[in-house]
Image 1 (cartoon, one colour):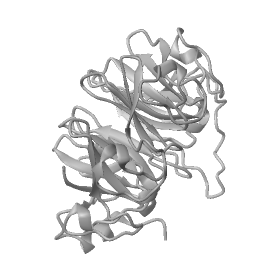
Image 2 (image 1 turned 180 degrees about the vertical axis):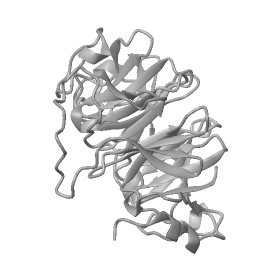
Image 3 (image 1 turned 90 degrees about the vertical axis):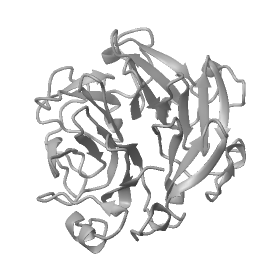
Image 4 (image 1 turned 60 degrees about the vertical axis):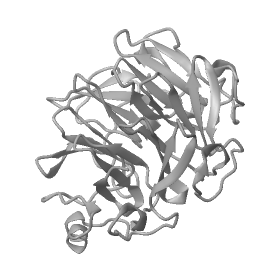
Length: 349
């Protein structure tokens, strides 16, 4: 049974250091993919198909604030034309993968299968198109975001100072950048071809096959996760370096030197407060930590096996194809345990 009720799960593990978040009055979650926190400490999250909704964790409760639930056959109720450049309410999303929140409170959603980024007003939750025409393609560099074309906007991540957004444009095998002040789009990395880059490659002339997610370090390094290449790539000063899994081979999660470590279908990255990169190694059913100083990697959540057990610590807690994680304002680690249809919270590594 893919849908699990959060209150019942919490009751079963009330004494555990790892908790399934209890949200009184909530519906059961459907494939939570990503969450982000605003300045008030509220979390916003997105559900993947068929739910296609945005939820908020507020005052100990979950609220659905945007999106119309699709039916079990994957049918949307009167979806708007994807390229419609007007406000739309209620919003109809298709396969959201990510959410990001800017310092001014603006909420950005990667509306992936409609090839765009959508902005939610933090007060009214009215949705407006922010980037992308809604039609798949590649174009618009040097121009305004709303006129640019993307091909499946997997993830949209903000820089630490909130001045720009990076977009994992997976269908175009590129990392795109949007200046939030000017809304101008540029390409940071990728030549549009599949494949794994080589260390020292020029960022704009190298393959970035299946770039699935990005995050940005305080020193300006952009980390790009290549799903098909099972690798993490660092983009800095126009050059590329494969920092996790230089071979690109899929394999089980093992600890040790990051360059030699395998991954299997990784799906998401985020930074922790110490400058480490947290990697959702999705098909290995675990969360891993890459230390960019020591150049090592270790598993911090999960045992590498698909499961639903909640243990007394992260190592004894199992995941089922996790797709998102975030360090909350309370300093704890939140994990979107996607195919267990739940959110987990526990101590940060």
